Image 1 (cartoon, rainbow, N blue to C red):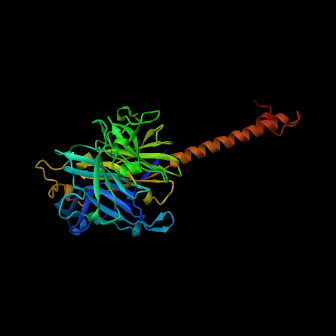
Image 2: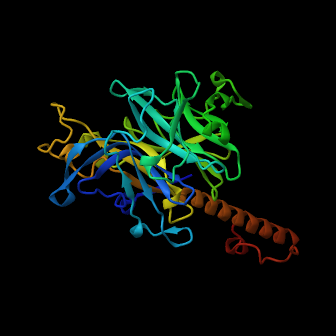
Image 3: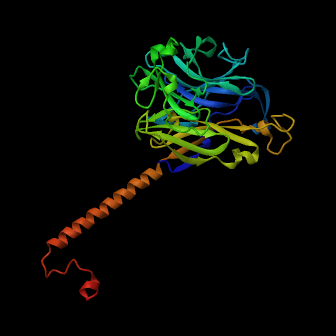
Length: 394
C-alpha cells in the first residue's frame, strides 16, 4: 500500500508557460518514443500571453489538442535531472487539431503507446460533439511519430464495442510481446481488451479480444468488470517492475480523493485504495476542480515511488467569462490554473507493515528459543526465572 504522498512543485514547474504560446492544457499523458524521448499528449490547450511577471495570462485561442516532446535527461542512470528538463511544445497554427477529425468535431488526446515492432503510435481519444457529449471508442494510429507533428501520417478506426463502453484509460505493451492492452470502462467499471500490434497498426479493430473473467474472447458484450472507476473519464495503465504490480490512478472532478487501483496481474484481482486528498486550493471552495490523473514513471527519482499528475481547471463566472480578471482568484486568467500538478506516492505503509512483520517474527523466534532453552534446563537451574519468581512471587 501507498501510505504517504507529497506534492512535487518542481515537476509542475517543468511545464512552464511560454509568452505568446503554450499557457496550459489538460490530459497530460506521456508516451515513450523509439528515440527514447517522451511525447506528451494534451487536450484543450490555452495559447496566449503572460502578464504581471507570469502571475496572470491573457488567453488568445484554444486549440483542441497539442503536443510536447520531453527529453528526460538523467544525472545518473535512473535518476532524471528535473532542473534540466525542458519541453518542446507543438501547437497547431492553421487549425485547432493536429489530428483532423474524420467522424467527430473534436478529438481530445488521452493516452498512447508506441508499438515495439512497428514503431507506430496508437492513441486513445475522447470524441466530443455538442459541448461535452462524446465517447471514447476511436483509436488513432500514426506511422511516423518521431517526425514533426505537421508531417504525421494519421489514420483512425472505431472499436466495435457497445455504447456503454469507452477506451480512454490507458495502454500497455510488454517488452517483446505482440499484444497491446487497452484499458477501458463499461458502465463505470474497468475492462481490458487487447490487440496484436500489427492489427492495431492496420486498424483491424474487429480483431480485438476482450477479457471475460476466464479467457480472451472476440465478444465485446461479455467483458468482465475488474474494479470500479469512481467515474474517472480517463486514466493511465502502468506496470511497476520493482513492486511487481499493475497500477491505475483514479481522479474525477466530483471527488477530491485520488485513488490507486493495483493488481499483481492485469486480469486481477484488483483492489482500490485512497492515497491522497487534492489540496483545497484546487477544489470547489475556489471554484476549481482537479481530474484526469496519469502516471509518469520516467520522472521518478525514487524507484519505490509513483509519480502521478492531475489536471486543474476553473469554472466560468455567472456571465460565462472564463478568464475572470476581476474575480477574487482571477479564474483562468490565473496562470497557475489549467496546469498539471504532480504528487509523489511512497509505499511507507508497505515498508512499515514489513518492518512490523519482521519484528513480530523476530520476537516469536526469540520466544521459541527461550522456551526451548527453559525446557532443556536442569530442574535446579533458576537462571531462566524472573526476579519475582526467585523471591517467591507468582
